[in-house]
Image (cartoon, rainbow, N blue to C red; front, side, top):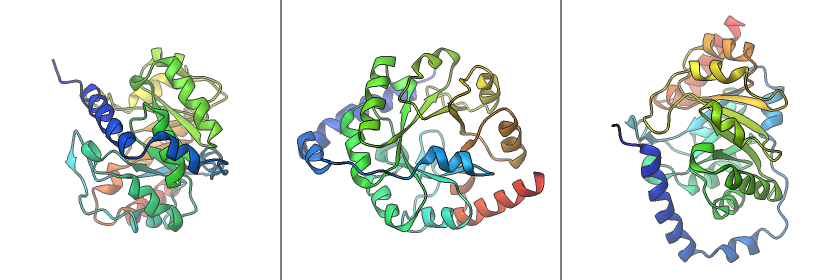
Length: 264
């Protein structure tokens, strides 16, 4: 039996959060967010874009190891914006993905795109962190939560004026969709084994609710795939490794969008 990587990550996340809350109590975060301000709508940005690329900033992954160890949050996110990204996804998990909260704090004043805090969110504490560092949206992963936990976290996110991208991988996880979800993402990667299959998006497309903006996540590397996914109803396409494995991720994105225009 293969190791369930997701369970390993969540177990570590609980330990990590306990240490963070001991250092900076929840009450301190709440005090700083007395009146949350509006962010930049990721949903609107994707809906209005002809391409819908959510360009991801990450340094490593559990399956691939280091992808771009020297990646600079002061350079790459801004380069993504210059080269046509519709939104940004920034990994903030340090142990497994090489990210930090500082990466979003660094990028925020340099870009005018919506920023998704991508992490394994299991606590309201992380929502307050996300808002304080300048994120506009947060990721909730169905496989990490119960439907009730998902609804509670999504409701709190909305109270903090954060949009919510719900990530599902199976048809059974459609039960996690609730009134506080802004976007539904289909992860083509199984978080237990990290096996990736883009066909997962096509399999679930017809079963997804029509009134949510749909995002396909992981394993996308060809413009033709984006076009097929758009035909199937998706409007957001989260891509990370395809860009980050190159020395100039922004330029790689530019070439990808140029090829996409040609295909369209």
